[in-house]
Image (cartoon, rainbow, N blue to C red; front, side, top):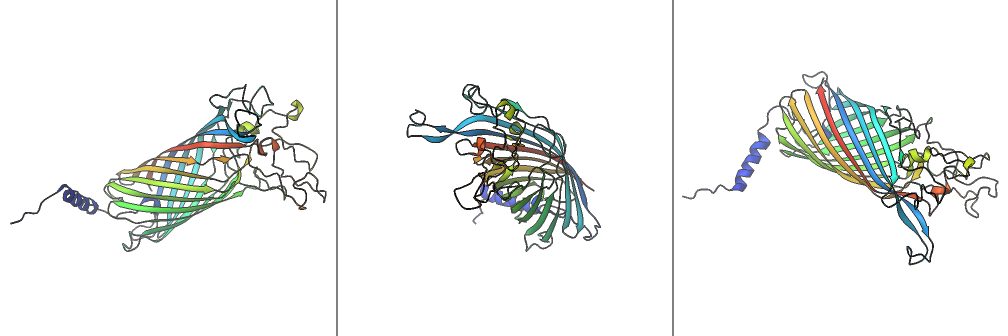
Length: 431
């Protein structure tokens, strides 16, 4: 008589089957496709209230172009423009978010986030090996663009709130033959006091519309998912992103396309309303932002610089804005080249008791190298002799936001080795 051999592999398979089948209570989908609903069965309404603390840390290098003129040992192959490391940038942001989610109908959810910034500071300093004797920013040899080191004021206050709708046309919890599919739309409103250089405002001064779709499918203890998102940004009429002339090439921050690919792992029990469970979430993220005007690493230092024409310094002034014969100071916002980001996320969701959840998450992004002073000189309106201050039609063709001191080739600033870290801790309860 042959006795079946019990191997480690068969024990593992049996344990996996028992693990994936031994759950009680109604199950939910992955958090990314979980929708709060109402008027569904015995429930007339569902709601969730949460408090979410977010800490964000950003670090990057700021490079500046330098024209190396031959003969010079630094450019042995002839005269050329080189990127030189100039500054180290760091930023710390702490936000307390109040999250509200409410079911409106079957598989239809309304949600809102009210952000309160409790601390936001940034720092610029000479990079290693750079000092006042050789800096291309703050030096005794040239007129300084701004003073280094620079520390921004601590920003606090109510931020830009977000509200949106999520709808699940199909959901695996209703019909196991379909995956869970969610469509969403979110609106970010410029409710915060607008950021201005060397001031405490935290608002972004843009209206943003996000279009989202996400799909997940449960396979026992594993639930892979994918999410696609597009963000359209439009300047607030009362904010700093103004469209002043036809020769201006960019107005507001660029639009963004993003993709998130990941999976939830139900480590202990499957997500449900009744009993405790623990889930692990792992994902990869990538996004692409088109060129636009942004608050960059130079925003505060550039916008609050004491460099003025009265001191014989025009480096922080729009020297080409000659429409009214006057120069005016920059506000720190600059034209930014398109860039991408990629990274990873890990999260834990623990439900210790009915109606209560605790979440902990960590996210990392790396941003590709890109120019942060990238304005075009203007538009050749009459099509002759390039961009001029007064063309054949007696018009100024220069971009009103072009500054040759840092937008001109050979003087531009570039961000490199930019890394962002985010830690999230949240507690939420079902209402």
